[in-house]
Length: 398
Image (cartoon, rainbow, N blue to C red; front, side, top):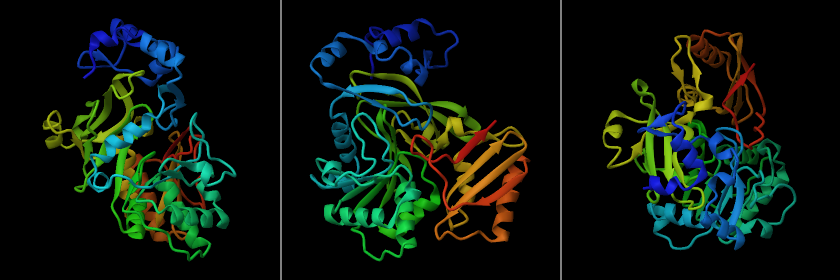
């Protein structure tokens, strides 16, 4: 893995490794935080290799989505994702068995340095090699019948073997197809992978039922690419290649660990002990064998979305979702916390119908018994995305 002496040649690590006091550490080395990367970027990664790449225009700047914290810039070689996709495909049997295939990406249309498809763009403008980006709207709840028909026609024309999706965007697309009584059939892919944000259980069940193909969670980020891939057993295996994952205990008694990434995938921005901000649930057996066979049970949310129950115990997004998933009609929801005064539970249903009073009481009682805070249950026809294009399950108001 990464050579400490080589890392010390970069300003960012020279500073971190010489100033351990006051820093979070893991294995006696300081953890790299997003704030460290953002500070004095890109000068903090300056080296001869980077300077030469700048001169030869081999680099591109992009920004993270801002899902786990504020957006930040990163730098990498051009076409970095092609190599990353090839690495992933080789580790997923259904993808590795086919050498060439078309792929549709269905996620937020938010702009980065290299991708921007908001507004009226042609299908040709949204094709990059064998990849078609189909969404052109910031908010999927604003899909019109014209949007739905266009997306169906493009998918049917492109015939993707594989769809990579944000689960919320893809499921709302299907909801609105039904809402607008559009009977046109959709080409069915051989596999769907879900990434970009937390995929709740009901959405995943909905997509599996509709497409009747494997629907797998992939975990990664703009900074380091993919780190874990769901396998046929439902667990998540570490993605092999130029990557090491460590688990920093958050609450070992509850099997909760924060994911730390060391990666040399991006030669111009190597990451060492990078605190991702995402939380993994890891069984004792998985933890025991982690060095030889890195595997986790699931991603349970972000550090920033942790709440604390009435006994001051950690509650993750997945803890909430485990309960909400028992109400099959809820597709999207959000808990908004107003200090200790009130919690509003907002929900959207597949068929735009209200929950029964009995179901609302069950949800209200669950949340109140968990936090000892009064609860309002509020039906909504939509929940707007955040500025990142992602959807917040936990919202904390002052």
